[in-house]
Image (cartoon, rainbow over all chains, first blue to last red; front, side):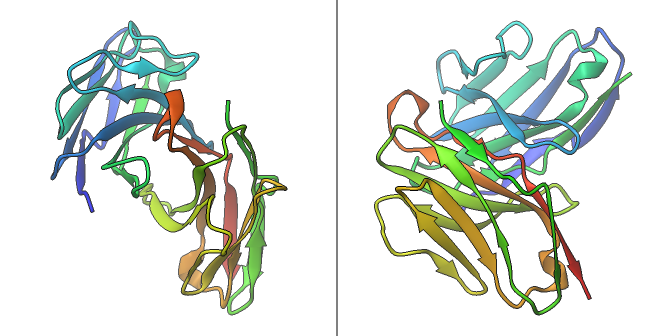
Length: 114
Length: 117
């Protein structure tokens, strides 16, 4: 199993500012992903965080808006840049040790942009 | 791209009764995983059950079982002897195990399950 610490758990931010969300895992994992869950909606994959290289973004998400770092096998950050109210959402980190193993999720960061 | 469809935005069931949640998916891959996740109000995603596509036998986990129809690309979840604690949002998810989408999870829109005492 993997225990994920995601911080902050919630934040209220002014539009135009940036917020960095951290995802810390208690063991090394091969895969780390970032998802967005808008209120009452499903989870949408933002990007795959690649260790030592640039993240792989899904259609509709770009690096300038959602820069991601993954310096090692236990830690990643997602930054939401130049925020607008449309960015208000829950952001979740997910990890797994392989494509055929269970995916674990952090408790999410509830972001409100005012 | 893989898509997952849950056609039931809301379902309800009486305590101790059985309920089935539907899920269909679209893929051109021959091998993959399917999951049902539960998300209570705490937001924590909890794995309920998983199914490997190469296995014909339907997965079961205590009161939870699936009906996996690979040819029809259907993956329904049956909850038997429903309990109040089963009330949550349930997400069906597809996971690639190869190619450019390796390891990524694709989710349906969810089914909100209410359990009545």
